[in-house]
Figure 1 (cartoon, one colour):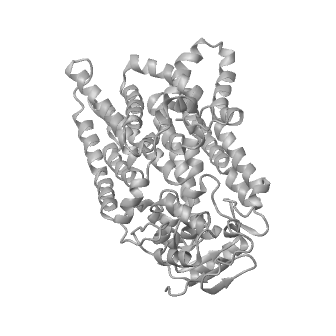
Figure 2: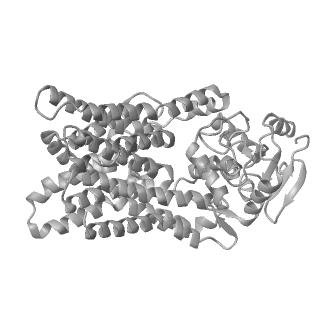
Length: 540
């Protein structure tokens, strides 16, 4: 890379970072006068669960207890990345949400740099790797078109882990994981390149230790990412071994094989511990049983990558013919991901993380060695820009939808996911400062998403996966607020769920009848114009 290319890359990454953060800036700037921005515009339910996972770290703990259910358990040393961010908030004196988005931006920048580094491993031409980079970073499918026209919500609109730019917009751990996957691929390719050569330039950096370090961190942050990237590296090493045995290529890559196997082995202990800890804790085990994430069907994925997939097919044909180390890596990566998402396992979709990397890089290869070659030289630049623009329309659509949600009339409604009313905000602050952290709060299902994140107490219901027996609990909580429970049944419900506080605010009142008095449950300990908190009689 010369100075001009580095400068172009820096400006491109800066533009992508600004582009991906635009919805957050708009939502923050559009905050109504009587409200507070919640901090999340994409999937706020999971976003607030990440803040809840950071909060024990803010309090100095490295152990996570499920926060969205009334059952208390010993917890386990899981979600270490989020706990670390919580500790960082304490060390830096920053609010959790500020630390979280700071980590998201930093991880996004690292991801973009790692993607470009991987593209540079595949091509020695600056223009070609620039095309690979943009098709990988931005590449999405037809969700922007199919949703408005036909109401079809394809994966590129709701599966951020499979699309780098969406991962950057959505949360902090997906871009970090995708960046680590790209870094692992770079290290593996460099190790394969080192085998059979005496070039000191190739043997200089410590690619093996870097591979091990990246694998261990990935295994801690997002263990599912280990499967496709190490599966691809394993196939690359195996292909080299077979070629060496046939005397078609360089000697058997023993050194690469040892480092790849060693890195995979070093990354496994923490995921294995996490699975043991979850299964050993009855509360975490109950959460794990309902944490089912099936993969969208094949036709959905095809539409979700659209033109990227078409170009990737052309790139895959060239890669299959050439069969260099990086060709086998990309083809193996796609193969392992597709097979993994087809297996009858509860967490199929988790294996799609980073899927946009091999597809985008193959698409860039298909463009450069296929479409570009049949185009008139004067038209190549225009068609390249048009192709990149079309494959980047879904991120634009997502930003427009998120911005419209912040600017539209629904933003000021009592059930907005983007904003909390002043009374609710004050109630959460009171709970954080005055109430016991081990207490249980009863509130509306939507409010239950905010309480563990902003005040730290557990709730009866707050998350479709992280509340034990979630669907039944949600229905029972709604029945409490709608008045479908008799008075003695309500008191039994409070005692059975060990409720310490009942929070009554705008979201709760949207569920209750105007003349229903059941909201008054115990001693009034906090009150604003539209929000009250009651301490339940007989509870701590």
